Image 1 (cartoon, rainbow, N blue to C red):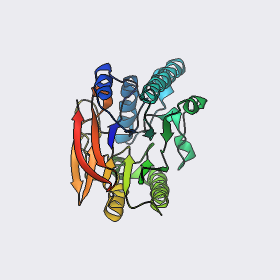
Image 2: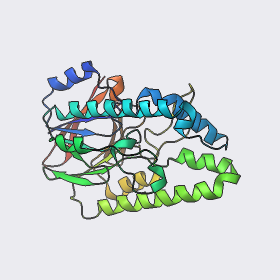
Image 3: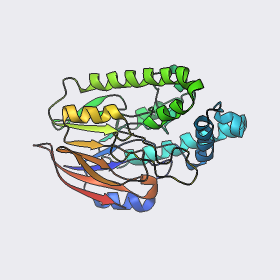
Image 4: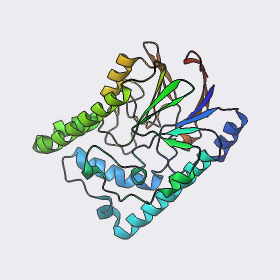
Length: 293
């Protein structure tokens, strides 16, 4: 079984990459998130991160660019994500996908209502995509293999480090983040109960210790910090899936191993990258990984 692993489009699906994919006889598409999240948001995100890093009040996006421009950005972002999802559906193969932290308007964050600061769109469009199954906080079986999905926004270790730096903010922010992380952790544990022995984990963020160090000296105040999720690593050690797929980190494309588990970051689709996994479906074992770039 050939699986196309892809993600981090950020509103773009390069034509060159699409042609390469069509040359392969793939059986299944698995996507790790960020269909929206266009480049236009970067200056806003970096200003918000910089304020948080200094212990200052984090301004809302509309306060930075104005309400009118903010609305236009939301419209542009949603339309770009919609176009990417339509292309994925048009491969006419089963598509299992999770949403990423850049897909605010496409899913509901279940662990803290305050994180849902962007109003959700009418998502009937998703129902029109006949080949797509969303498993953001869910699992699905395919040919005797269980795909466990866990996407959306998450509190990375770098955010906890940031709070520790500013003790005046520590109590309130740390409590909220710890609460969200604990709820997330229990949700994943419940998903992993009674799964088949042949498991593939589909994450947006990387597990702690693998593809997780931020390498962005340009303007990212989190440069050098970890964007990993420690309870992902714990789950991998406990359940020993054959394969773990993750994205979020454009800095990486490659395979690592934790015990006998393969961990794969396919690279960012916006940069023309993806991966093809050749899987022995009877044994649930990885036979080969080939990268597209």
